[in-house]
Amino acid sequence: MSLSPYVRGGKYLVSKVSVGADLRTAIEKSVKLIGGFERVISSGDTVTIKPNLNTADPFPASSDPEFIKTLGKLILNAGAARLQIMDSSTLYDSTREVATKVGLDQVAEELGAQLTLLDEHEWVKVEIPKGVYLKSVRIGKPLLDMGKLVLAPCLKTHKFASYTGAMKLFVGWVKPSDRLRMHARHLEEKVAEVASRFSPSLIVMDARKVFVTGGPASGEVREPGFVIASGDPVSADVVGVRILQGYSADNRLGRDVWQLSQIRHAVRIGLGARSDDEIGVVSG
Image 1 (cartoon, rainbow, N blue to C red):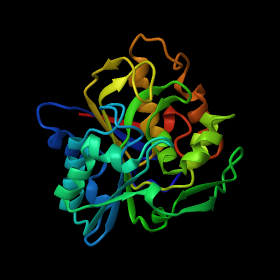
Image 2 (image 1 turned 135 degrees about the vertical axis):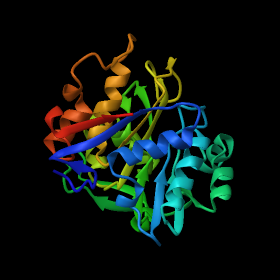
Image 3 (image 1 turned 90 degrees about the horizontal axis):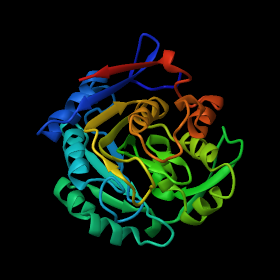
């Protein structure tokens, strides 16, 4: 198994919580069900949140700023001394403009968090030890000093990568020109390989609204109304994709979740859960 702190009885824990009127309660409960923020955040920690700022299109195309703000407050309440929000947008968009349109700059200000936009910094080459199709990639230099990492993915179909979840979120940290080259061949396998380069402490997925067609910037919206939390990106994606598969829609998810290329390759390179036997779902 990977080094996920949220493991019990040999299973990666994943919570799936219905969101009522109070978003904070739902996020807090989702993390508490798998072991709590205190399992990964200690007093004085630096914590980086990775949102989805691919474009300025509204949630679920990009992160809901209220979700990021609520998650950030809970991280600070858990003892984090320094909070960062880091991302970069597509090759054709200024991340600062996207952050402003989405409202994430205001969220960072309210949280007292540092908003780090990677396209305003140097890109550095890093090796991918588990890479089969992608041996190295350029990422934003600030990522070399990110502290603890909390992923905050959206959940949606993706016209090229089948779906976007926890693993795909990491592609937003890759230099945009490198992302374009990733699309040439074996994109879904390369998504898993990029994800293998990082070690998130916690994943809190916003699955209140999802795309069940299209993606990443637009698509048919459904509202399953869930928050998903885990320490393992593969497990989070398996639970998330099954939510998408519960809707009748024209997309690329019409086969067993373990046969989808992102997840199948993640298993092959030893990224996280390898089967349903290694996932423990806790509902609330």
